[in-house]
Each structure stands twice: as structure tokens, then as C-alpha cells.
Amino acid sequence: MGGLTSRPIVIFSALGTTIGGACVIKFAAGGQLYDSKIRADNKTIIITGANCGIGKETARELAQRGAKVIMACRDLQKCETARKDIVLKTKNKYVYCRHLDLASQDCIRRFVEQFNKEFDRLDVLINNAGVMRCPHMKTKEGIELQLGVNHMGHFLLTNLLLEKLKISAPSRIVTVSSIAHQRGTINKTDLNSEKEYKPNVAYEQSKLANVLFNLELSKRLKDTGVTANCLHPGIVDTEIFRHMSFAKSSFTGYILRPLIWPFIRTPLQGSQTTLFAALDESLEKVTGQYLVDSKIHEPSEHGKDTETAQWLWAVSEKWTRLTD
Image (cartoon, rainbow, N blue to C red; front, side, top):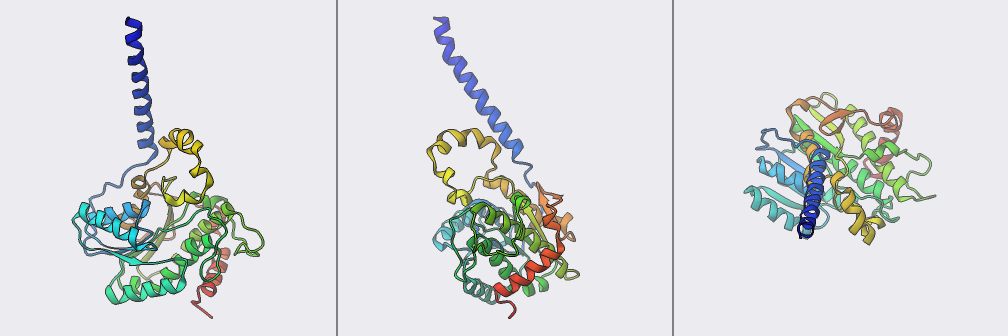
């Protein structure tokens, strides 16, 4: 009888130890939380893609710290649901939903026009929204979707808001890139993936474009009081994986996900470097940097290519109609 009664105890003990160990690993792998007490009162902050994932957690934390938060989202219904949740949790009524579809340059211009009428300053612009490894699709202007949303959309948005950022200086631009930029190259002969489209290659190119945009932008903003930094948030469990077939499979759901769960960050954990970049006093005059786990890291060699950064800027100006 002793053997029979002890067996469930052993099983439950082993299970508890496994779960506890997994939680410890997840906590450690998630990095440190940004626990600075710095407030964001009287700061006006735009966050793209703020209705879910990293963007929502960033918006919630900034609202908690007293900021006026503009949630710039494509889906206004989801945005409003997220906004209500944030307001209830933070008791900050200055949280706003505004329509922004980064796959439409006309929509980006309308967003900026409305913002400029409503708000007299912009302290932080957080370029957070993104798409990953989607089927071959294009923006309304005919730009490959990942390049169009992840880079071109944010390029146009940022440039249209630069004057507001300058008059609000010291102010900051924070762009969420990815470690995937390390595998990326800028295909100067087929930037729009017309000859060949591979979802992973296009995504890596768009994330490298984020880093190169940040590099050139920081140089152009020298002595303006506006800083520009980009970051890798970690591997985070968000909706960005929705286009990847493995994420929808039963094998992933029942077997793979539990195995990799300890090593994937939650949206809260994934938002920490963004918060650091947006708020921390140590970065007041730091610009042109690539951040990982709230520390300055070296980007890839391609990410430091000033010639390609200048070339990409010139092309981006033309494709977004900033210049003729």
C-alpha cells in the first residue's frame, strides 16, 4: 500500500519541480524589469501597434506613469477595447485611440494632420508596429508589405512628425527592430521583392532597414535635441507570429509550445527595453544606438553601413513621396 500511495506523490512532486523550474527559467530569460520610478507626467507619447502585445504593455506602463498616450492602431475596435482596459487599470483618462494604417501612406498623412491639430507637443514617438513573415502582399502604394509597414510606414510617420518632435525637445524616437536584422541584407537590385519573394528574407531586410533608418536619422537630428535609438525586444509571444504556419499547428500547440515556453518572453517582459529607451535619464543624450536588454549592443556589420543607410534614405524619400 505504501508503494501505491507514494507513487502519486512522486509524480506530483516531479511535476511541481518541473513547472517551478520552468517558471524560474522564464523569469531569468525574460531579463530585468524596468523598475525606475521615473514619471512621464505631461509627456505626450505616440505608440504604433498599441492594441496588443508589446505595444499594449508599453502603453499601459506609460499611462501608469502619467503620460498622455496616443494608441495609433489599424483596428480601432481592438484599440478601443485595449484602451478601456488600460484606463481602468491605470486610472489615467488621457489615453486615446487614433486610426493609423501603416500600409497606407494617405492614412499616415491623415493621422499626422489630426495629431498636429489636437496636440501641441510630442515627447516620444515609439515605432512599435510590425508584420512578420506574411504571404506576399503589398501596401496601397505597391510596396512589399513587410518593407512597407515595418520600414516605409514608420519612415514616413517619423519624418512627418519631426517638426513637432523638435519643438518639444528634448524628445525621443524609439524604433523596435529585431535580432533578425543580423541575417538581413538590403537588396538594392530587388528591394521590393519583385523578382523573388521569401517571407523570412523580406522580414530580415525590413528589420535591417529599421537599424539603418535609425543610424541615418540620428545623424540628421544632430544638435536638435531629438534622439533616435532602436532595439531588439527579445523573442516575445505576441500576435506577430500569426502568419507563420508552424504557430497554427497542433504539434506546436500541444508539444513544442510547452517546451519553448520558458524561453519566450511575455509581452510585459518584451516591453522593458522599449520603456528604458523611452524614459531612462541615462539616454537623454544618447542617440544612434541599438539596444538589447536595456544595454547598448553592436548591431550587425550591415547595420553599421553608412553608405547603404544613405542610399536607403534616398529611396525611402522617393517611395513615400517626401521628395519628387
